[in-house]
Amino acid sequence: MKKNLLSILFTIAVLSIGVLITGCGTTSSMSGGRGDYSEIVLSSKKDFVNRWVRVIVDDNEPVEVRPKRRDVAVREAAVRMMIDPGRHQVIVTDLDGYLLYSDEIFVSAGASKIIVLP
Image 1 (cartoon, one colour):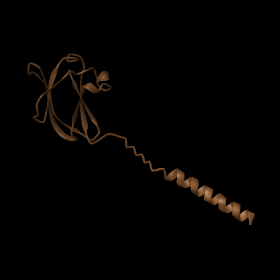
Image 2 (cartoon, helix red, strand yellow):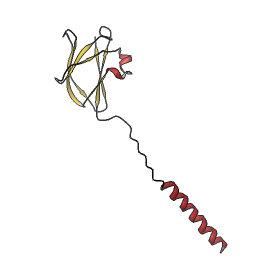
Image 3 (spheres, helix red, strand yellow):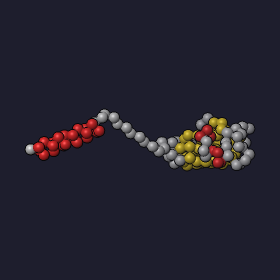
Image 4 (cartoon, helix red, strand yellow):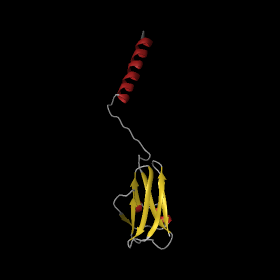
């Protein structure tokens, strides 16, 4: 009888601890990874490092950006332009209107396209 009573008490204790652990009422979720967006990163080999240029994506309003060296541009978020994934027409000119880059690009979701100017 004593063994049965100890077994019952032990079972109740284990179940109570399980209820306390799982029944605390808090839930937590975390998601990681990249969202459904893409990026254009402007860099320059030499001539246009830290000089203002205009970037036009799909006939939208021009955006002025200062390209960095490629090794800096990959790390620095200030030179990244967020765009929707897919095909885009990108035109880059200097402030005087001289054409530096013009091409249609494709960027996958969560990916970055690095455009290297002269």
